[in-house]
Image (cartoon, rainbow, N blue to C red):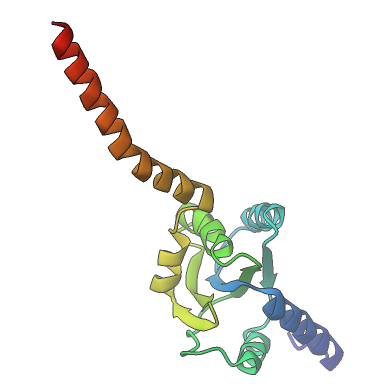
Length: 163
């Protein structure tokens, strides 16, 4: 369905605003996704301060070309939505949770990470990066494990001397 020039201009301005604020972008194909499921996706992402925006592919391509990101723009097949947020990893990891639930109707087509276009595989890898709190926990555990081993060895030596 054709849209007016005024509507296209307002959509283009909205896309520019999204691209300017975005720490990263994820391009999502949502072909065949039920309306109720899409509403759930939108509501969940909105609660995490992540934008889910659907527009015509031609308008999205124009907005992306104007930003001049490095690399090659992915091929957009099917219906296209842009998932974006100020955080670099959170948009990809948040939408990846839904991609796992709705494999046949929702897929990552690529994205923009640190000013460079990424393909679907690269964006999926970015999506699997653990949250910052988990990484902190892993670092603390890594630091703690040699100390814990040393304490256990001292405890074993003390038990042996008692016998």
